[in-house]
Image 1 (tube, rainbow, N blue to C red):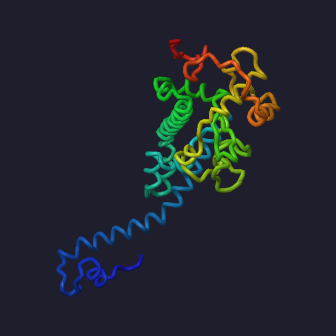
Image 2: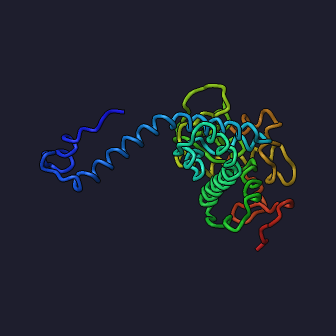
Length: 286
């Protein structure tokens, strides 16, 4: 480690020549300089290891998710690294034989924080959609499982991009790789095939800012769903619609060919909210 120049320290911190400084005056500044150098040394020694280990844990958690929807809606890596428990591990200076056990013991807390963050993402999306539909706050009393089911509906559609280049985005494919209607195309580091979900290089606040509600696209989706489903089409999840390979063409026809002037049956809802038979906390009918 480079030595500290006491003469330079005296002139920089105290604007005095070293010979005119007493030890009591100089000592606090010397301790500050020593601690700063120690911190820099520790950071250089452990920062790379900590970051690599936690990014590897992120990929492990991502790979362990049981469903495609959970993978497609997992939090971005930057938000993961900003979780409270993860930040603590990033800043630690534990020796190698203690770091791995500390990382393993922190996994339950990290998983809890991940679940909390993903739930907050769902609430952000529900707030965006409901505000666009003119019913802000209606969703706030609903459980996270209800919101997850609601956001998985095919008709709950978001739009990304400017008016000349708009694409639709659904929650179940929010960050899915290699499709156009995904926030992963908004900003991505690279195309490496590793499971880094999917190497997103921005935080959730950025991706949230790329989305908006569009009533025109919502109506086009409602028309599309009525072409493929009879009865309770408004409760069809996106996954079921995707079984119809031509649905995107049908949607585009409704959106761009002027068919939206024709009437369609509005779903049974309160300000855009369906009543799920399977939901544990259904909306009241009034």
